[in-house]
Length: 333
Image (tube, rainbow, N blue to C red):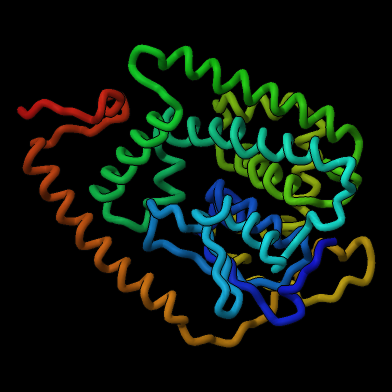
């Protein structure tokens, strides 16, 4: 394991987006952080942020006065590692580092881009709405979905002229990444030196999202299903880490993962990756949380104004994804 210093001082708090599809958090950015903390056997509580659906600071981890945000220093996992809060990579042999770095980069770029493409561009939007916008008024959700779709298309360099070419490129890179990971894993339990690292956490978060959140028609999901060892690896660790076998009501997003901790000491190989839930005492909100709540109120108010302005200016224009490719320009009725 790594240097789990979080266990020495008390419980960490992971703030993520809510769970669904049988996952403790269904956000593809949040799930790898959850898996990382589970693999490290770190004690942590899981809270949900439903007030900032389009904010890039979520997920984040609190540990006393320490906060690691998703939009800082390469993300939450890198922050926790560099600051020696929870470090799964400290004992990685030096000979494995070059391949470990390249593998991590491949997952964080090619596969991450493919997920964003399927979630925001190549789907009907229902999955993204369920994860991010289901707690918001429908008009606000539609506006935020349009904005995010437009941002993903710009990030991927997609226009109306090159959409088919870009899609083929995205899926080609994803297939190459899956093939490389399948070869790397072989029959091992983990990707490097048969022990968990942050690369396992990042890929497991990706794989579990693809297998459980994306629809049967997903090109990415069907590509992953062709590689039996990757699917077996993901599903085995899902059962062990997320304790899915103990829950038959995965449609309820806050159960059984709402306030889970891992307080059990490590005694044997069978219990190394497990964490037992325990009741937690109510804690006072931190100043940071109070600020976030105040900002959330302003956020909702400004978005409501934005919807009113949008509807008055564009007279019911749909704001669809196809119309956003050339800068989101619309013609008034």
